[in-house]
Length: 443
Image (cartoon, rainbow, N blue to C red):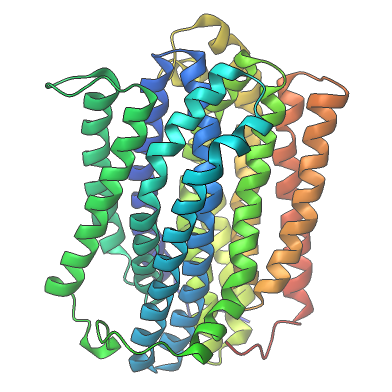
């Protein structure tokens, strides 16, 4: 069946998210480049502490995505007045969850990292990063609530503006707090974490300011602060909990992936932190197109146009893969120049070259896999997407363990896990969507 959803409609949802991802990756590149000037230990501590924080962050991301699916379905059904209650119940849950996680991390994070990390220097650096960074969780979770609302109703331009504000604040404070400029203390890795917390707080304030003063929120009945409805909260959580676990598990497995590499030595870990930053840049278009897929699939089902789901997904995959192919080609043409953004150490530069080529190939495969996978989530069958992630991540971590720990293969062999993961996600998601078992799912 031919889809009435045009390329322009897809692009109108995706490009603000892509621009926002570009801005967020400027933060990632800046952090990595600045920490790279402090040495291998700072790079290693940054990646370990950062991934530990991201594991917790994914709880909010998964809940927000569950809310986004329901919001998009209500928007597609035309029941706009029901959206405000969904948004506020997502907010209630996320704020309480953020406060609980902050308390738990402050009590137990040092002990947890101590069990997992061998290098004392990297442990100290990672712990310092986490102890500052964790305070940003509350602001990040509120931001995810706003994201779920704006993406769910396909009004994503404000996300770009908010992210740009966050980036500008973060880059300036990174420079000042890491190295100690303009009368501020030189905090090193702790300064990078504190800069991120402040920038998230500013972006949260920007979201609130824009929504209250510049957005017509009345048709959606926002800011009514409804009494807690446990039935609605359970409905949201029924959609969200598989996504919460799925995304947290995904980042946790990447955290374990880097712990395996940490066992290979401080140099492979520093190289992998640089490559992680490059890889995320290559993935920039994917986040936008994947979010657009999620929203469009849920809206189409709400409009009783389920027959258009697969044609739309195929159209988005083409756009996503072409976009990533452009970025991957650039990275293959000037690989050394790209790595020099992060470090001047010739050992790190030379060891990065073979893996950089591999991750460029992996990113192209991920362009199709992530879109297909978000198509599964968009149907509302989040438990199925969770099972797909569980199976593929199990094989991913097994491969990494065998290559890094058992067979002690070169770093490029460990990173081949990304190609394996992309192929498996694409194949299983395609099989499920073609089976039509998702039709008739209510959210």
